[in-house]
Image (tube, rainbow, N blue to C red; front, side):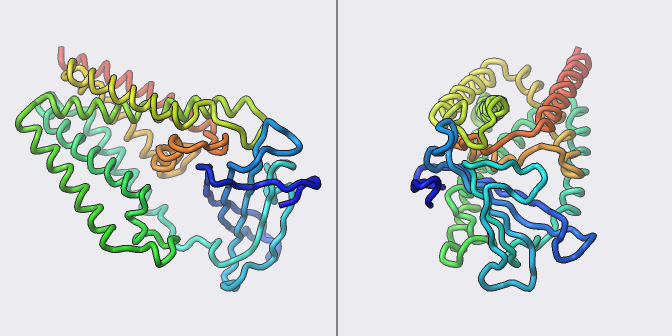
Amino acid sequence: MKQGGKCVELTSDEPQASVNEFIERPNPGSAGQDQEGIRVNRAGGATCPEDSNQLMSVTIDVWCNLDITGSPEKMTASDKGPLDDDDTDPCSVYIEMEHSNGCVVFDLHPFLVVLGCFMILFGICLQYMGPEWQQSFMVFIVRLGTFLIVVAFMYEKNYFAFFDPSEPPEKKDPIKAFMGIIFAFVLQWVVGWLFRYSIRIAPTLLGVYVGYYFAIYIVIAVNGVGGAFTTAKTAHDTIDPIMSMVYEAFGAFIGGILGYCYSAAFIACVQTFISAYLIVRGTTLFKNMGWPNEIVLMSSTRTENNNLVKLPPGFYIYSFCILVLWIIFLRSHMRRRD
């Protein structure tokens, strides 16, 4: 693409960020009604000619129009997006169009509300489980964690493209999807079977999972804070993907050591933290004010996001609420044990 008399690259072959979100605007064709759509943000291109501290990026808005099923219509490009909070940015190209693919196919919100109720209820029940339930809880969490980690890994490797309606037909392989699910089930069963022969295995693995999970959120929080102090829409992350993997490995190692050496105290900390997390996270399924998708966050630490994945203030508010509840629950748990 030519900009300022020079050819610039909007995207590159290097790992780059891609963030999808739902948007809406006043419908230009129907007064008093809103038009929904999908926004795709892409970053990772060449250095911006107008600002060497920024990278080129492209934002594509696909507005819902059920009557357009072939080639997109009403396509425009500019350096200013259609939303009120879109800034004029010479380093970002906004492209908008109308198409049926911009329409929401299936509304999951009612199901998420039900899931949120179960998460809150389970979090409350988990908080009041006595010591006699700790071993069963620990084995359940370790097996569930093993299953979810394997599923997340398979998802990143496109094993579950068969279930994704946005994937092209040539990538939809039911055999790969089936084998991915079977492998996750077998591996979590193996972990549960090994626990019979060593009581240390479960808390050690639990420590590895928790340490890895905490490290991911620390990396994301640091990148989010670092991005808050720059006006550039896309710039290099404060912690790059290589250092992110180092921190995640270190977090998993420290967590494993703590789980192995201090099993009882560590399990109590994990039990109360999960309880606090489930309660707060369950409330976000009713109305989310800023808690991002966990799968997107985990995958974002492995690629250069170029400051595109931004954490809203709501994320830090939710995190503070989890911390406060965790401290309250942990003190209550310790009192019951004394």
